Length: 224
Image 1 (tube, rainbow, N blue to C red):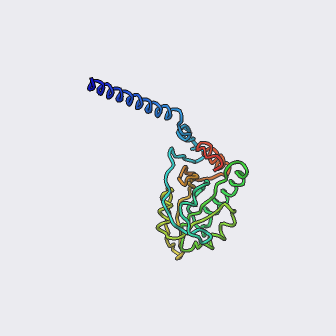
Image 2: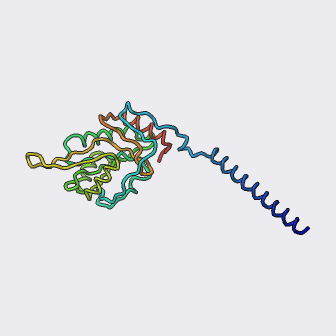
Image 3: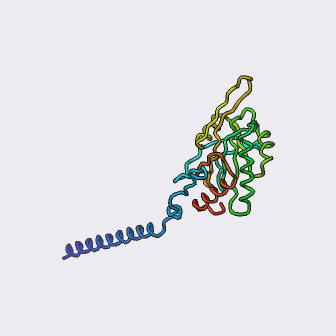
């Protein structure tokens, strides 16, 4: 009799455990079905090809770096977090493309001001030998307080640029002058410090503003 009671008790315990496990699995399934993160419900990225803009389905990591900003302070990837950033590879001695692009971004920021997040701009130097922190500081002040720059080790700068689908090279022309060739696109970095989109020239401020707002809305970052 005692053996039958023990067998019955074991079977009852096993049955209770099975019920508990099934209940837990059911709760997990329901939770996954109901509490889906908002990012997963965002759907495909907006098609902004008419604005020369490509938005990634999933944001891409930016290379780790340790460089010097326009204030002479050492900075890392942390400076990219907590806000949107337009990253651009260029240099202060650039005769045309760089100042034109930065001036366009200044105009875009003026249109964005007071109506949602305003992105910062990060100039990644393609000419670190001449782009000292003080030179960057003087150059960028002409565009506004939201414009910053990084310079330093050329290999680190190139690795950072390549993680943003950009590149640069230096050469000497027939007159013995240093010429810097570099990519001309903008990389849009989200508040988590990851590349979300690439904007290709030619740039128009109104199109950059429209593309930026649509990306922010899709991304769901709000006023980050």
